Length: 263
Image (cartoon, rainbow, N blue to C red; front, top):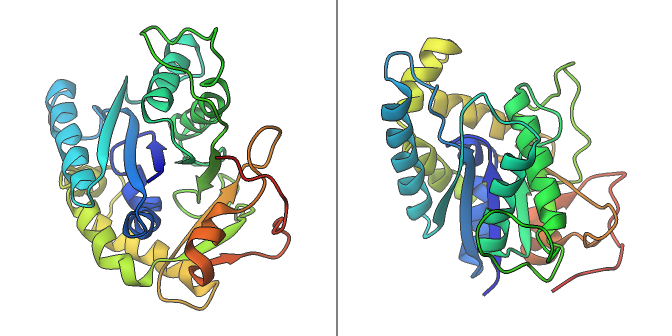
C-alpha cells in the first residue's frame, strides 16, 4: 500500500477541491493523508482564534477519519503563510512524516495569497524533503524519492483574472459525490463563516456546483480537475490515469506518454 498526501492551506480546502479523487484512491488501496498548513483560526465571524482553531482542527480530523485517512496539522497561522524558513520547515516535516508517492496541493494561481504560498511551500517540500542536509527543525528521515505532484483546480475554477487554469486531467467523481459531501459537511463552522464573509447560502451547494461545472467539460455529472507538475526530478507519467483508468480524462495539450515513473 502506498501513500498519498493532500496538503492544503486551510481545513476544508482538500474537501472542496480533491476529496472525490481521494475517495477513489482509498477504494483502490491507497493510504490517505490530509494536511493543512494552518488551523483556519481567523475563519469565523465571532469566535476567537484559539477557539475556532480547535474547532476547525477537530472538523478536519473527523473529515479525514470518515474515509479512513490520517490528518496532519503543520502548525501555521491563518493569513500569515509566507515562503520563509519557518514555513518551509513545517512543510518538509509533514512531507517526511508521510513520505508520499503522490501529492496534491493548492494551485500556484488562486484567489488568496495564503493558498498560493502554500502551493509554493508544498512544491518545494516535495523536492527538498529528500535532501539529507536540510534541517527541518526536528529529527526526521529524508525521503528517498520525488513524488508525483498535482495541483487541484483554483477555488473558483479560474485565476485572479478570470481565466481557466491549464488543467492536465479531470477525474470523474460522480459516484463519489456523496462521500465528498459528507466530508465537507464535517466542516460545519464554515457554514457560519462563508455565509458571513462570502454571502454563501450553502457552502456545500457551492462545492456541488463547481464539481458539476468541471464535470460538464468531460460529459459527466461531477468532476475534479488537476494540473501535473512535470519539472526536473518529478515523474513524468500521469499516475492518476494509470490508477483510475477511464475515470481520469487527459485533456488536449497535456503530456500523456512521457516516461519516468518513480517508486
